[in-house]
Length: 608
Image (cartoon, rainbow, N blue to C red):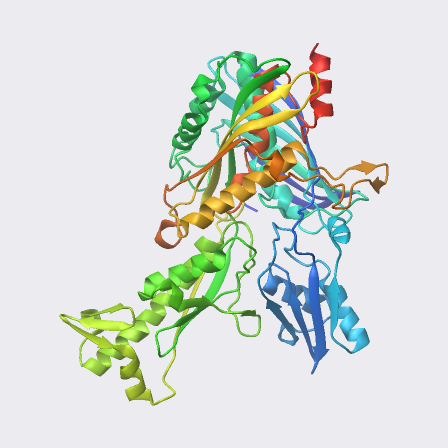
């Protein structure tokens, strides 16, 4: 870890890991502040609820373990299996195909070793597929308790935040240590501070294991942070929009000392939500009868940090058709289309001429997995460089055949142009190499290097913001909350696939919507009481907001053509925006999700 960070492994009994970050003297700054507020928030445990179950096929033979898996991280899985079975990595082979949803639930090692062990014992191929009931008991999102102390001056300037965070890791470690780091680092939100002190830990419990989930610590942090920001604004009599505007990080301003600057215009995104929601008209007459309406805003923020790396290979066949090879797994996010589009653009080929190669760890170049919204940026840069390498080879070959320099040629639709003359490449290749032709193979890679000055030991590659506005209607006699309008925005840097970007924002926001109002894996003592899809409540089509709008802005990024990741952004700010709207409607604050009618009604009756 970098400046200001302490990370401990199993520091106390039952505590899996602990992360602490300090910048300045938070205690002294809090003491010198005009106001200090302390609030506690409870985040629920939910299941990933991917429709494709956990499924693997294993085969053992010739000294090799071969696995066909729905896992999101084929090379991480290969290394895990090699370690578990005491083998070298070259004796483990992983195949990955299209995955029917993952959302982090199929990251890292799950039940794959069991399939491999059964195949070893049986001496026959084995298929192991979990039921949906078993899947619900395999992995969840981290539940948590977050306590925030926040200082503020009388004029509305934020001063310091001190945070104590406990995440429920469940029975096994999975990736709880990384989730703790991300939650603890992101708890400050998109605001500037004089001082920060946070401590976050993962606690082992005898419950369903917790692991990575879309947003990866950002949803827990955003719910607590943005809820408290609204609460403080109301306590001080400051309009919540104005309170945020006063304290938002500006473009280029470092998130924390040593980290990269903010690369999105946070205020512009917030203003776009305000306009679309009609937020300035929120003083409209209340709904009739027992129902009251209110509006709320929220800004979620997630970093795309870490020492991400990827390798890629692009093969261009004699007829000009190309195959893009990388280890990014298609889990419904449209990654393969975006990556093929990058390769096609660099090579000057139609998109339909480029396909994504099958993933096989014996042949596919390595990357560190399909997560943290880094596919388009990190793997995309590797593909961009591999395609550029192939392009260079093609132009050098053509230049040699035409007796000119490569700089005199341009490549487009599998022809090379020199001045006013165009030359077909396929006849040129066949004439030189014979009927079998020749394949131009380009290689590329990218890696985000360590930086000890950065708190997380690597500069954040880009920032993932989410702007959310919600209008709700609350029945103060039943406690039922109905979201009548939901507006969610995100920054794609530059959209490589605009339709897929919108789809990612909308899908993520509706997952967060489900957690806000319905989803919760509940326990009665030691037993889960709703761990079956028949009773585990997820949003239905009839539950969707009457008016639901998404938008994508393009503020630029570091990836190919200015792209950056967007897949997790829609998750971040939804829960807080709904909680803020509920308080605007009926004057009570919900600090525990989901906002069920029972909890809302209890809060209303308590206020009376």
